[in-house]
Length: 315
Image 1 (tube, rainbow, N blue to C red):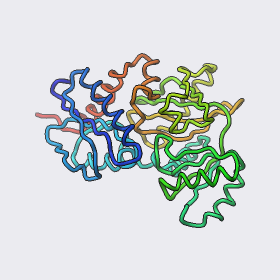
Image 2: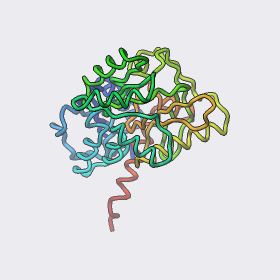
Image 3: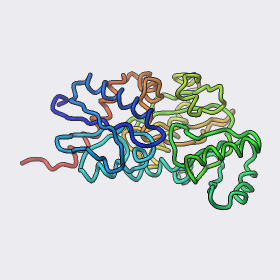
Image 4: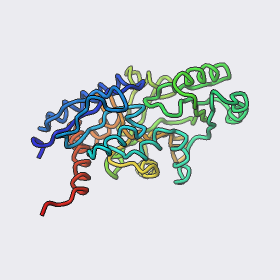
């Protein structure tokens, strides 16, 4: 089947995560070619997919991070073409990308999330900061709809809070300010309907920010050392967060765990996790016995199965 199945890997994009996306896409192309798929790549330059020809394409592997790739825009366009694609649909993607909407979904599902305040930088900022002050320091400041921890900073006092807000405002008008949860930084991948092993991230920056993710200064424990019962609790919380947003195929759920607290705080769900050599989902899959190439192939096979289920049988 592979030799007759043309896959297009969409990468690049026009968001602040373009370079990361190109690295992810190039890795996916190499992996799928090793599995015998005819593969081509497409560098997304605009929301209209200018230059893309859907004829002869069997499936699209989405390796596009950030705006348009993760917010449901690209998924909606591909559905207009009638093309199968990897990952979550438009609505789940939109919910996951918006940290405020996602937070509401987690809370409705009975999951813990850090207390937070939505701040509109163009509205009543002083009034919003009165509510923020009630959270207490330290605080985590993040743009509402950016990925890869872009624009995310830890503020330990008022001066750092002002700096963090100014930086986040360079990316978006809407900013989410949350209470910092002390303890362990954890992440769990979801493949299909099954959680992967838990990864613990030890970052010298106290926060797993953009620099920590991509300059190699953070150390990952695969799997995270913890008791079996606690492992199951955390994995089930990750799966519940994935399902609360209506995600499918795969995601990566980021969370923090307080000392002596069995229930984790859900931070966010990444519907298009990084797939570079240093990315977390491939590391978790590898521990569970799934190679990088196998992981990419599994994602494609899932969306092809959906395509076959939709198409009427020939009689």
